[in-house]
Amino acid sequence: MLRDITIGQYFPGESIIHRLDPRFKIVLTILFIVMVFTGDKFICLSVGAVFTVLVILLSGIKIKMFLKTLKSLLPLMLLTVLLNLFFIKSGDVLWQWKFLKITSEGVDISIFMIVRISLLLMGTSVLTYTTSPITLTDAVERLLSPLKKLRFPVHELAMMMSIALRFIPTLIEETDKIISAQKARGAEIDSGSFMARAKNLISILVPLFVSSFRRADELATAMECRCYNGGAGRTRLRQLRSAPRDYIALAVTLIFLAAAIVLNIM
Image (cartoon, rainbow, N blue to C red; front, side, top):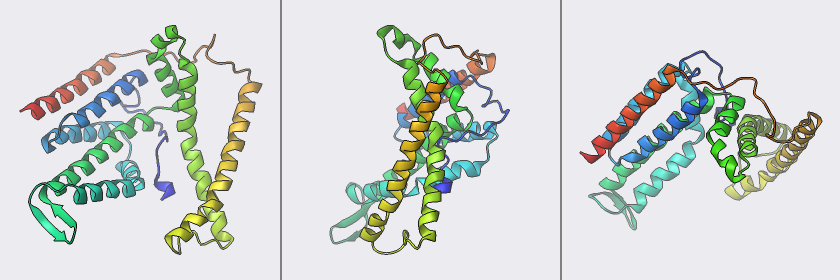
């Protein structure tokens, strides 16, 4: 399951999505989130689904990578479905046992929510899949640069976001190694009662926290040795420049957003 988590990973490529300005990609991702949450009807989600499929095809990344993202968050999605099924009482009753009741509206909302979450995860994953952490940091810093006049630590915030994204795959790999090592020592992590498995998590969490603090200390030492002192006076190897394709992508996204809004109103 841990190996299926692809959040924060970057897949190099030369697709049109890879070559978009990262600042535009962040804006497009925000517009996509608004598109998905705009309507409360399936026809509105169909617009987001077409947009998601189009972006995935243009990115050149295999669809199985996006499916792995969904698989890693499957328990959360199932919990969302169960909550909607049993806590929504309006609509025609389809099944009932004592105090448990499943209605037609509960089924519709459950399906709607599972589709919305799936589109949201797959669509937003394109941003990190096609943008390197360093480039993403520069883009966030450039977008938030007006806040520097208010003495807001823009560079430090962007750096923290970049480091957090960068170390998600590393921590997942470290967790997988710790689990394998504990199983080799005879630990029964995946078996036993719920309380027993919860107690066995201590043998995973303690070494993981120790390893995380050690990595953080090593990173801080490395940054100090390189005389890192924040964003003051720093230059960039690659300057961000927009191109016609960025404005075309923005226009296409706005068209899809407008279509979702119109369909929701109609």
